Image (cartoon, rainbow, N blue to C red; front, side, top):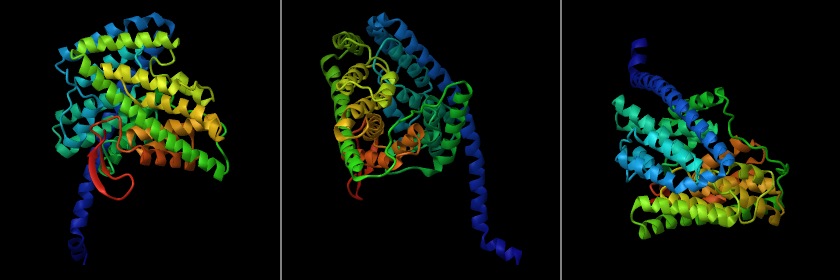
Length: 424
C-alpha cells in the first residue's frame, strides 16, 4: 500500500526534493551576496557621506569639478570601458545574461564619490545597482552557474546594493525584480533577493547606518472626496513632471554628444557649465544628492523653482559623463514640487511632498509596486491608500518614458495588451 502511494506521488516527491535543494542553494547564495555587497555598500555609503560633508565645509571644491570629470573619463578609458552603459547594462545583463565585468564595481565606486565630492548633481542608487550587480555577476561566473542562475544572482546583487544604501529591503527586492521587465517578475528570485537584501540591510544597520525614513505630518486620518481629488491632481502633475525629467535627461545627453564629440572635452565642459549655473542661481542647493533639501520639503519648506533647477543640474551633470544615480534626484524633484503644489490644492505641504516624491519616482522608473512599498518603508502605513492612488496615476499617465532606455514594458499601461517595448 505504501509502495503504491509512493509510486502515485513519486513525481511530486522528486520535485519537492529538487525544490528543497534549490531553496538551500539560493539561501546560501543570498547570504553570500548579501554579506559581500552589504560590506561594499557600507563602505560606499560612508564614502559618500564623507564626500558630501567635506564638500559642504569646502565649497571651493566645486571649481575642481571639470578636473574630476577628466579623472572619471580617464579611469574608464584605462579600464577599457569607455562605452560603459551604466545601469542600463545591468538591466541587459539580467534579461540577456550578458556577463558584467568586476571592473564596473571599483569604477562606479570611484567615479560616484568624485561626482559627489566636487559638487555634481547625482544620486547614489544607480551606482548601488551597478556595484551589487557587477559583484554578484562576477561571483556567478566564478561559480560557473548556468544562464538562469546567473540572472538571479545579478538581481540578488542589485537588491543587496540598494538595500545597503537605503535600508529599505522590501523595496529593494521588488524594485530589482520589477525594473528589468515591467509586467514580468521572476518570482524564482524572491527568496535569494530577499535574503540578500535583509543581510545587506542588517550589516548596514549594525555599522551604525540608520535606514532611510521620514516623519510626515498632517497625513489625513479620514478618506474624503476633497483630499482624494487633490491626490488625483497631484498624481497627474507628477506624471507630467516625470515625463519632463526623462525628456530633459535624454535630450541633454544627446545635445552634449552632438556638439562635443570628445568625451574628455564633453565632461570638462559639463563641469564648467555646472559651476557657472551654481553661481548664477546663487546657492549650493542643487549640487550633490540634496538629501537636506528633501528633508526640508518634507517639513513643508521648498522653493517654487527648486524642482526645475534640480532637473537641469542633474541632466547637465549626468549627461556630460559624470556618474551617479537619478533616483535621489527624482526624490528631490518630487518632494520640492509637491511641497509647493500641494497647498494650491488644499493639501498639507508635508503630505503633498511625500506623495509627489513617491509618484515622480514611480513615473521615472515605471515600478508601481516598488513605489507603493517604498512609501510604507519611508513614511509608514498611514495614508497608504492615497500613496497607492497617486503612484498608480503617475504610472499610468507617464506614458512609456523612463530613465533606463533598456527597460522593457511588456503590457500596455491602459489596457491588457501585450506590447513589449523599450522605454524612451
